[in-house]
Length: 308
Ligand code: NDP
Ligand code: OXD
Image (cartoon, rainbow, N blue to C red; front, side, top):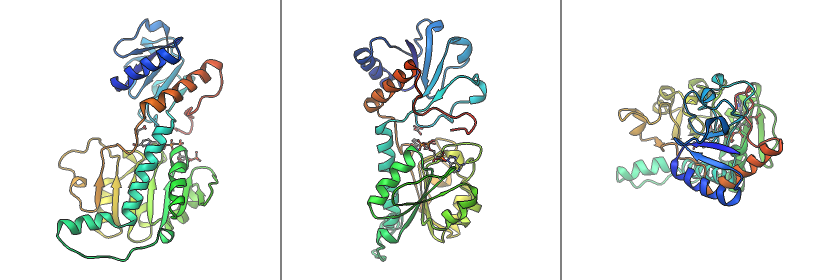
C-alpha cells in the first residue's frame, strides 16, 4: 500500500522508519517525493498538496495529522472520499495537561498574582476550594471527556456541553441550543474544546460572555475562528470576564500589534495546547491503516454533514 505524507518532515522520517520496521507492506513517501502518483492510495497531511485529486487519481483516503480536519476544504474533495482525523493517546494527554494547567491557573488567580508581582504588590486574596469552582467544558468528544475526567478528579464542580446528549461520570451534561444558557450560567471557568464548524464559528462572542457568571474566565483551546477578539477584549476591559487563557487565534500567528499580546488578563500560547506525538501516534496510525485495509470502520472518521 502506497501512502504520501506531507507535514512536519521530522515526524515523517520517524514514521517512515517505524512503518518500515512494523509494517513493511506499507510504503510511506515523504513530500515532495511521491513515488508513482497513480499508486498513491492515501494522503496523510495537515495541508494536502494542491490539485490533490488530479495528481493522485486513485486516492482512497485523506488523513489529517492533527485532531482537527477543519483545515481541509471539504467542498473541493469528492463526496465519497473518507476523511479521517488523528485520535491518539499522546495528543489527548497533551490537551488534558493544558486544560488542567489553565483551569488551575485561573482557579488560583494566577493572572492576577502575576500582575501583582510585576507591580511589586504583596496582596493575598481568599483561596476558594475547587469544589466551589464551576468548570464548564464545551465539547464532550475525545479531548473534552479526557479533560473533564482529570478536572473531576481534582474536585472541581464540572459540567459539559455537546451537540447531542452525552453522559459522563461526575459531570453535569448539557446539550444543544436549548440547554446552552443553563450550561453557561454555571460556568465560572469556561473551556472551549469544540471543533470549528459553521455552528461554532464566532460562538465565543459578546452574547455568550454575557451569559456567564460575572467575573468568569475563559480557556480557548478549540479553533481561532470561534473567538471574537474585540468582544473578548471588551468583556475583559468591562469586568464581565476576569481572565482568559488563549491558545488558538485567527489569524495565527497574531500580528505584533495585536492587543492580546500585552493585555494583563490574557495569557497567550502559540497553538501548542496539544500536539500529535510521533511515537504514540505511529501505533494509532497503523491501527487505523489496518482497519482501512480490512474494510472496518476507522477511528476519527469525519462526518461531512455535521462538519467534524
Ligand atoms: P470530537 O469530534 O471528538 O468532539 C467534538 C465535541 O464537540 C463533541 O462532543 C461534539 O458534540 C461537540 N460539538 C460539535 N459541534 C457542536 C455544537 N454545534 N454544539 C455543541 N457541541 C458541539 O473532537 P476532539 O475532542 O477530538 O477535538 C476537539 C477540538 O479540539 C478539535 O476539533 C480541534 O479544533 C481542537 N484541538 C485543538 C488543539 C490545540 O492544540 N489547541 C489540539 C487538538 C485539537 P457531540 O458529542 O454531540 O458530537
Ligand atoms: C490539532 C491541532 O488539531 O494541533 O491536532 O490543533
